[in-house]
Image (cartoon, rainbow over all chains, first blue to last red):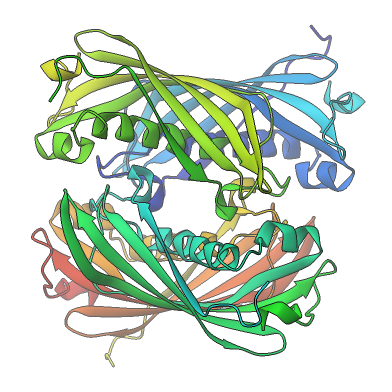
Length: 137
Length: 137
Length: 137
Length: 137
């Protein structure tokens, strides 16, 4: 796709109690905000802020999400979100994610618990598709 | 619409799985969106829409919340939110709430599981305090 | 109950304010709990309760989710979740979903805003895969 | 109260996009999980884990919550949760919280945006009130 190598980055977080359900594991919907955090931090790591993008009238809208859940995660787990830009067209961005358990109950771990992908489209203030900012592509 | 809006109303909902936590009961933060729904339906019952209010540049901001949790609620419980306008000043609205279990596991019930109160302030597009619309007071 | 459970069902809900994000539309993660509600109501429509299933030590775990977002939804929209069992194996259930706008701002509508699919696996008390209850397959 | 000074601690977090609402500010219900995180980290800072407590059959249930919202918080704000044990009886724990903006848009800040308090009760496996573990009081 591009000459510049695809960007990737990671961020760690603790599973919140509120993110877990009566089965005692992380609810499957809780992974989506984590992936969003992964994208925010990926932008920050290249010196950009998604908040500033929105202030400039450029919005990234999620148009597709796919998650495969392999192993349950639990309250208080330390989780690493590994985010990667897989592909970028003029108006769309494709990311992939690994959701990795890195510590549970004080024990280090390194276990991929879920893998995921998203497709984002760039829209303007008016809600219409628009070209991604040049620096993003 | 009416000269004096009714001071109270109710709405029913089913507890969602995602609203419950590893203790197997409704997470204490889940009650706040229910109270917000109570306020929305109270407006609708007088022929008003909070969505339309916002479109007109009038926003109601929660400035205070208090909840007392008496009994746990569970997934799939049928819940009734009883909402009441307690007081209205020029810029503030005070509501009270009863969160009532009305059915569990197919059995009818009538048990107040939580009581709550909120204070809302009216702000304009600019985020500054402004007078409540006349019909609301 | 019935000899063959119906393969599809629907439920309506109002979009909550808390389910929307700073873009003024429903956050993409909010659709997942709606799909979960769709599955709960599908079970209820055949006289079964997922809560009772869990009390019997049978759990349905989401192992895969895919959502395609076509059009934004908004606060206070009336939404219909159309849920369908697509396939059932000995241990897995496949559902498909249509998320349909049926009313916005008092105007009737009939617009598919998102389509989705999930794969669920049946696990026992011990977290291990187990056969789906006979009446579900 | 006690001879040992009341424990206190703090934790920092970034506001998530999903935690904000159509007004473009943090939804008032989002503060409650932050306070829960504050309590978890306070326990961890004295070498204890709430996850381990639950594994031992000791649960802390929120019985009362009060939040006063003074100033709006926004997506991507860096927030500090300052948590303090105010009082402990045989079965109840009282915490207070300050929710402080410490950075916005790259600019350092130190502004209390909300203050809150909670009351927690200790319950056993059976859901009945029980004495707090000795080391907690």
